[in-house]
Image 1: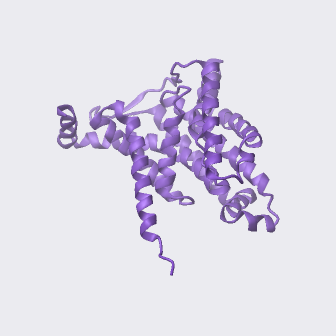
Image 2: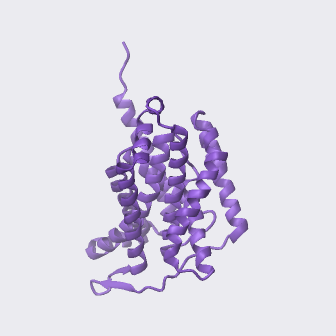
Image 3: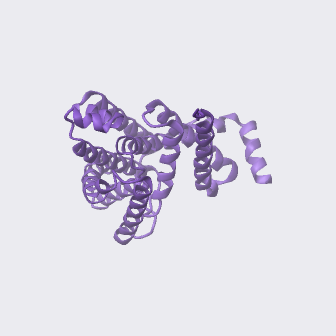
Length: 303
């Protein structure tokens, strides 16, 4: 308790520390936004709650890490991971996801949960259980007499995440496939009547989600650590963001992702880094409880 009180007093006595924590939270929150946006696509278009979301992220990270081990530039890992995970996502859709779209919620959850376990075990067999990262060798920027530090690698990661997110948003608004995806999300039956091949839309959407996660993983391995069984942490965070923001609410996803990133950093500072995962789970429970209370208030009594 004394340590917690000491950490809280540090935030009060040195307000600049709050700014440092917020900056760190925004940096990691930008990646939460990217992963959550992919989940929102699959959830909104196909009504599939993908429990393997984080495992796609870690898989993309290992693609990038393997490339660096072979002598390729680290930044090349992002587009390569995007392409490789697109292909993996398409195969998984054909083999697994296409069979559960029309099924009940429990079936889709069970299928994607099994998929998450399988992907984690495959990564463990291929690469081992040690944590891995990619050192870009970039320097760190110092501000406020060294009290605020911003690694250039993290800054590049945020910029790459923002660029990819902007590209996906433009694609969704401007392209014919993007319009087809939005139409299918609104009403799949009406979309089929209008001549849209919803099967093609579903395959494209899941592949796009997998590719987005792969690129996010390639960015994460450049600034943090990856390990075959770290996927669950990113899955939980993606569900927190999407559940808090609501489907189809892009500004809400951005705000929730950045906010959760900042809250996690504050929690880690106050309670210790060991509680960071517990904070993510607690946030998910609080969001679910809030949504349940909100639904009960909106429920109308039939007469």
